[in-house]
Length: 198
View 1: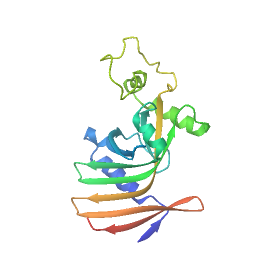
View 2 (view 1 turned 180 degrees about the vertical axis):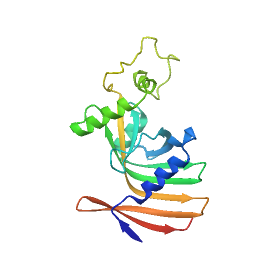
View 3 (view 1 turned 90 degrees about the vertical axis):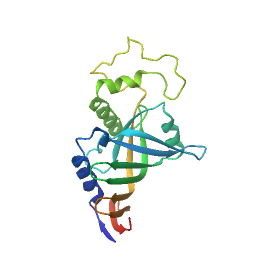
View 4 (view 1 turned 60 degrees about the horizontal axis):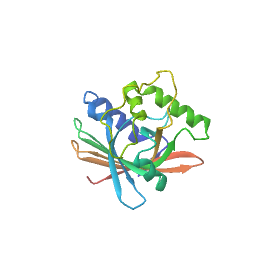
């Protein structure tokens, strides 16, 4: 087992994203959480990039969605990401930080705003709709729902930031599997790598 300050799995993930970039579905992955009832929930979300110069993964979501309740109950989750062209799977465990408009950290509020403006207008429009997960009364948004392209995030817009601490990487083409674990030394993340059986 070897240890490194760098993030060895991040380069693998960036390479997989590049290799599979012509496939639109490559920017989607599954996010699993645990609810207050102890049951798992899994859903597909969109990769919104890494948070600045870190290995933290960004996900946009609606503050009113069920996943927020799950994360508030248990702030750990797992991503499962499969790339169909390169036959690579990443399972990424970590702590999820919920950044909504009530956050008291100015830096996190800036990150939320940046994520909002990085989203398309159609994506932003979804946050003006009715509460997700409730029975539908109308089929479409009212025609008067519009997003001001210069206005900041609406209340229901939320940025999730997953801070990885464990990654399981599997390459089915090369029959190679590796485990990556994170520890901390004086506030610096250290990643250890171990080859494991597929």
